[in-house]
View 1 (cartoon, rainbow, N blue to C red):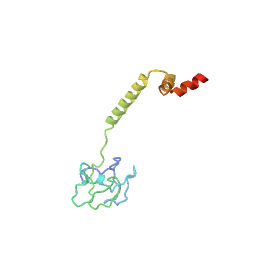
View 2: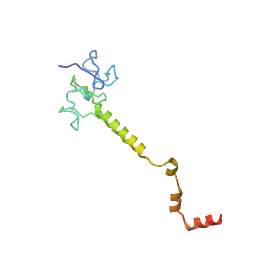
View 3: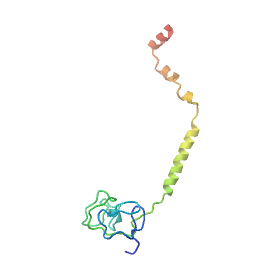
View 4: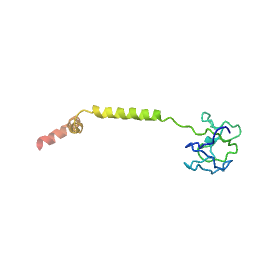
Length: 133
């Protein structure tokens, strides 16, 4: 292996973990399972089976320990995610809702004025009651 073996979830170096990984091996930093599809050279998320090995059975969960005998560890299993898009989207959403709050017109009492609603559903029977009172 050319690169340094790292955890697929947190990127921590896995220098002292026994190889081949036992099925229940875990990362000492984040407690992620290590005998998983995401640690394998055959893992291809673009495929429907997510595995490029011709004999391997597709795993249901690619980030949980499995019994695959075809696991070949890949050193670049950790993919750092770019959180810039998520931060930008959150800021836009916050700005949108702040703008919506500022656009609210009218007082609290105007929003709960039920007179127009009562007038809409007023019946002749209601008119007779009010005139008798």
